[in-house]
Image (cartoon, rainbow, N blue to C red):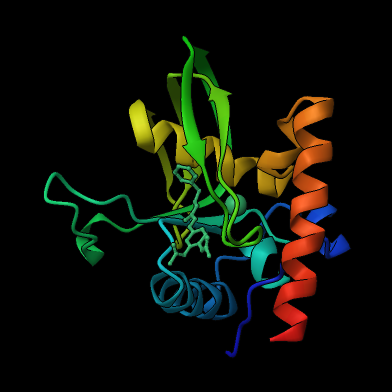
Length: 173
Ligand code: Y12
Ligand code: CO
């Protein structure tokens, strides 16, 4: 399966992803193909809609204490639902679909998530810190929301201006 990352302002990023009903070879193929594209792009999280597949699927690979990303720490989440949220945390977020831009975004600090693994087994995960932020960021993608949608009016305007300029530069080079 050949996948490419969809970049803002592509309208597909606004799509609401659909619940996964079949935990079959096609789902496994999607998950298997998402991992290398995330790693090659230096990402720590990727939602299926970022590779133009509107399914409630996301993967995360948070670096360990040494800053290393190892496949043992790969998390695959299908049909995730946040069942508990508490506290506040602000982090400078980036997104593979919005290359070159980082913005401070406020999220819940502690969350509890119910999800299914690639075989349909139900799991619960309690997360805080960077993992909690990453899950919320990726789950937003499943609802058609980007981190830039959370910016204030003035910050969003500034972003749009800078992003347009960066796109023009990219086309020229
Ligand atoms: C905290 C905040 C956000 C997340 C969501 C996952 N985001 C990413 O994985 C973003 C990665 C990213 C990587 C880029 O490539 C390099 O830095 C080489 C990048 O590229 C440019 O900015 C040019 C942009 C984003 C999880 C946790
Ligand atoms: Co993103």
